[in-house]
Length: 505
Image (cartoon, rainbow, N blue to C red; front, side, top):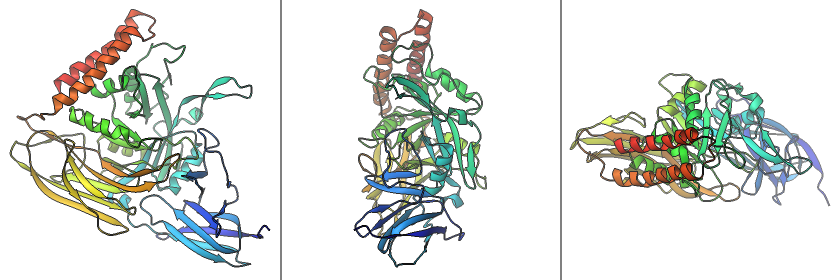
């Protein structure tokens, strides 16, 4: 027999303001049956591009996004309420005895920390398929300050079963302004540009759309280069992110994106919360640093369905002292390397009082450097580590929590040039579809430069990337579909110049 339902008004306030706050909510009864607010669904599509926004599965568990209040039909009896709002808020898990005639429920979310007070603002560097309005709601509910919603060219089946091209959100392109914003949160619409072999770029903060959105592929021609996209994006302070970095091609590895990074045309290296083995791209980023290539680390959800939460992997960027939040300010903080990537823990690193930056610190051989690292998290983690040229030089276990906390203060001699990062790792699961991932956070690098000593492992690391560049040159010479010898020569020169630049590092 179906239990009688009664309409209930739910309101979720922010403890600091006493006002309704957007959040992610899940309500179930004693039998774990999920109830959706009006305007949301108990079962919904979770395929790429399928009515994305407002609902989300975390693993197999459905949730709804609300603007701080909602109406919902619920049965009387024991009701379980779960409310979340990003990594800086305490999750709320409450059991309520809903008696007949009770028409409202009130809840309160509290921050356990506030990085915005310290100038740190979180953003998602790449999401797709949401409308700007859905992205704004979900961004506020996940406590994101910035969402980079990217239009991309995709293929779908029309009503007759024919494959046709589609470009979502291109008409909402906003470039260097927010397409939509609310206090403390904004959605910017830019583009994702890709070649099926040469690589994929997220072009952020562009002054205009950079065409073509794609080239090459079946029936296409290699009559363009990724470097052309980079140059157009940079003409008026755009930011170029190497996206989908964990997707190398058999033909030529990481393709032209690698060459453009070496040539200084790419500003940031993306980790995304992709399906399958987590963080494969993280090892490649460390290998790039080993080779002497300096590049900011950024995080992105890659959200394109209701099977993934916006901001599940995010980028925190630090603005200047007293600087208000703006899209340009956040973009420039990322470009400068003042960032860390996380799916939960909050991590920091300072070397001689200086945090991550693309500007190296000059140090004499034999001198010492002081490092200070810290990790804080509402989720349990196993350890905080400091890496120097890929090797762990310090580690610390967390205190009991939540919140969990670990800190490192140490002094080390300067033995050669290289890089340092702080990372936070653990076995706590972050729910995702189709597979959970584990707790992770890492800072962008602090670089040490000595005038007399070289990092002995740099040449070894460079040989790996030189081999990929050689494979790319061979692909251009034998397989690229160029219409003229001049086009082929132009594309090959990108890789040849990158080899020269890499050898000079």
